[in-house]
Image 1 (cartoon, rainbow, N blue to C red):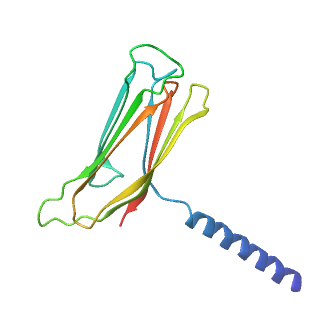
Image 2: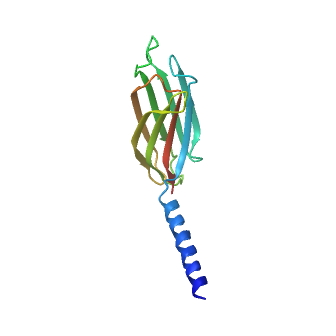
Image 3: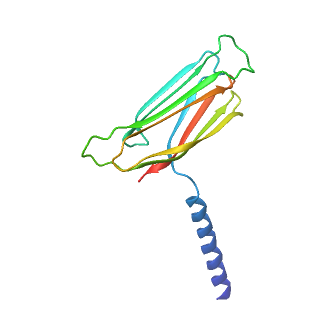
Length: 154
């Protein structure tokens, strides 16, 4: 009897530990991967999302290389992020809460070569808003740029 009670207690504590670990994980509103191929030399990539986070906001992301000559040590890429929402008068929409934005750049071999964490933003219940950020001096060796918006609609 004591053996099964201890086993039940251990199983319960493991279940609670895994539940609390999942509670600490941020919700992902949206993740975009802008792929440039081998590297981003001479590349321009743009994404437009009419239903950001499966909700009422719009997102626009664009990345472009500003250098005129290939230089593997150059840091000339620019990333532009924009999220906006318009709410007509008399309409009800849930608040959009973004806890932060993670930007990760990987080279052609999958190694992390660029990383940035940006502050989040919030558009309240039935409120519009705009969030615009620009990142400059991204290494030209970036082959894939991953942009993750953390948060949720409440």
